[in-house]
Length: 141
Ligand SMILES: CC(C)(COP(=O)(O)OP(=O)(O)OC[C@H]1O[C@@H](n2cnc3c(N)ncnc32)[C@H](O)[C@@H]1OP(=O)(O)O)[C@@H](O)C(=O)NCCC(=O)NCCS
Image 1 (cartoon, rainbow, N blue to C red):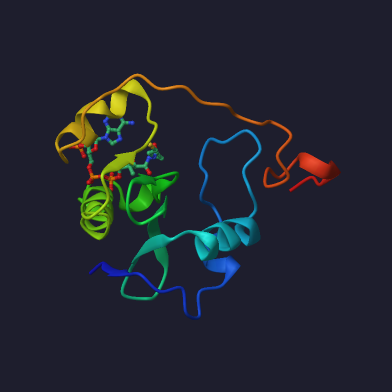
Image 2: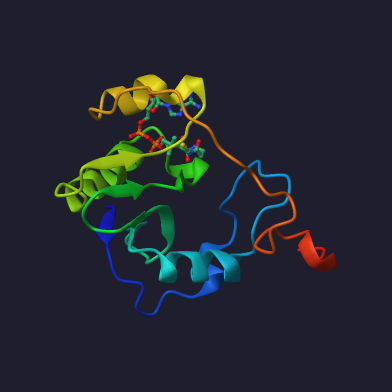
């Protein structure tokens, strides 16, 4: 049974290891915990043993705009609706905000369309030297 929590009380970096699948220089679990703490919203999917199996976060001014930077479900728990539920709950939490944006690969467009989002063109910068990335500053991560 999966439960969903919006507080990070008692969550340790150890429980967040292994996320950022496929990133060339993934942020560390410590960095992820900091990211979640600093986010205006974070929702964790937790299994019945307390393991974190999925997460989503959002940054928002609470009025005009919100951005959803991260959504990830551990491979062992995919295909069972956890990702859908995380997005649904986050959109619910942001229901008073005018614009909610995220960036995704083309293959995920149908996933988000089912949740009521529409595709738009966008522009972005990715700073390969950002300190949150594990290889930045000489760390081997
Ligand atoms: C995207 C992701 C969060 C979905 O989580 P999930 O718990 O498996 O989602 P759900 O079970 O609610 O929905 C699964 C559906 O999403 C769609 N989907 C998920 N990943 C997909 C992909 N890479 N390509 C195409 N469709 C995909 C499929 O329609 C899938 O349906 P299926 O299970 O019948 O194949 C998960 O696959 C993941 O963590 N991927 C790696 C990180 C990522 O891509 N995050 C999104 C960043 S924008």
